[in-house]
Image 1: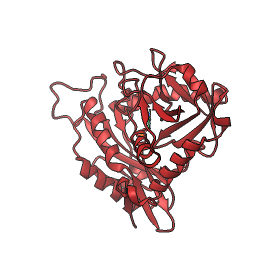
Image 2: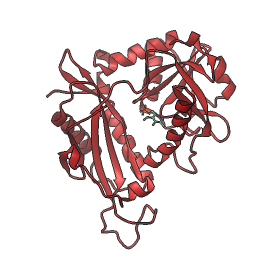
Image 3: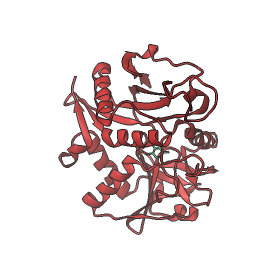
Image 4: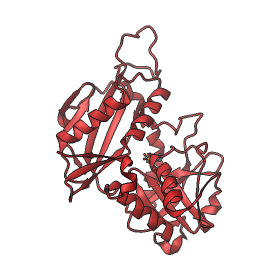
Length: 313
Ligand SMILES: Cc1ncc(COP(=O)(O)O)c(C=O)c1O
């Protein structure tokens, strides 16, 4: 992991080492920030960076900010321009990961999202950081995955529909357990016991030749990659996706399973709780979707050029 030289903080581009905030910042004290992870793929032949699905990420960032009662002072288009500008300054020559975030920046004790009587106090700030990033999960093998004993945070407690920094403690607990137990990652169930999603990515199953994925109401983050995989499966492979509640025991007998997310990309699952899936390799449908997705990320798929913004520097 290599951090880029410049960041954007509040209203300025700054050297990364100068992008500092106080230890009394509300977001640090209470996890009151929202963020996005956007990937950019380096096409070495064309010497250009392909920014993947940046607009839907920034739209979700604004929706997350709304849930935390924030008042963003940049529009979608302004944020997009700042992301592009930051990449032009950092000039990565390899795949990159970009993290824009709105955070509660007031220096104050007390977790409330609103500060009555102090409307003039600056409360929300914007930051973008970026780094070089290859694969977050090994996408070349069938991952060993366990069902976590931690349950997914629920909409009435800490809405998973919003990408809220504080809720990533839920991810961290599950991820730590799977690492300590020797697994590559984990799958969350909801409090009701239905399958939700991976620790920080959505889950797809292949069952009866169809894709199956959890409902938005089963406490998933409604992923941008998830939506795109559903589209690719339909348009390119003629595969339907079934959205429904999934029981835990179904996981053990599916034909194929894979994770989908910006960080995770398309990551095949080879076993769940030590039940072998697809001979512990990437199954044929997973492989086709992985190839299609990769071709889009690298800007090599003419049909889906609208998914990327090409940046030259
Ligand atoms: C909890 C969680 N679920 C799912 C996803 C996948 O979402 P996306 O495809 O929009 O990156 C992520 C990653 O951002 C995540 O953190």
